[in-house]
Image 1 (tube, rainbow, N blue to C red):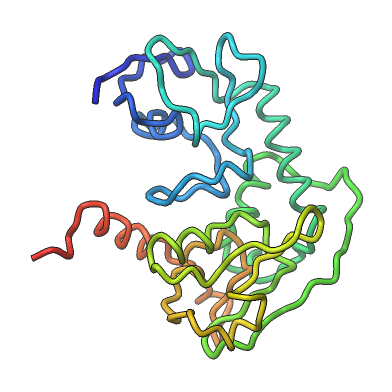
Image 2: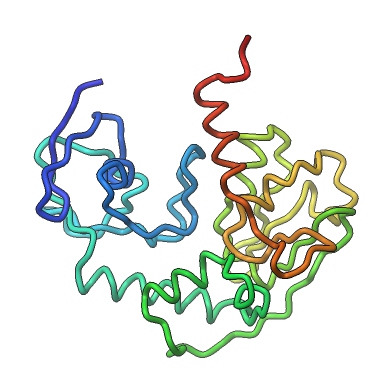
Length: 238
């Protein structure tokens, strides 16, 4: 893999030709906000929080999908990008019911973090207040579809890391929802291994551990990072 040089926010950056803009930026400490992205899992590109400006391109580009090229010039922080990202967070907050005292209490919510980072101190959009179900049929976990932002982290981690593919997406548009197996209650899923990786990957309080206090509802991303690193570096092989 060859090495290319590009410019990100006026800083010269070297990266491998197969890397994405997001990976190249983070390798030198340049933060680009994300919600659906998890290092080590397939990129989804659904949240659009990682949009960046590419010199010469007409449209904003998702940094998690766009590969680096020699001589590229990238901007990750502009007034336009900040306004877009703020609007994305506002849309997510207005689309579902995210009135959640748990996240406020324990600060373990990436949507909440994004809202603080983007300066969302009030909602400019009308709330839709959808009535969505809460499935607590699983013996260890529950899913509150009101908190779900459809990032598909649970789908990808269950498929790519656990190999169970219990989670999937059903419906279109406003009827999109996460389902387990053939849209049956989670507790009746024949494929779920109860590993908890979907809980670790969830960026909000949508997937939660039953019987835990607010302070214990930590998604503990470090465990997920360890598993991904072990898989990529084949640490299980003797």
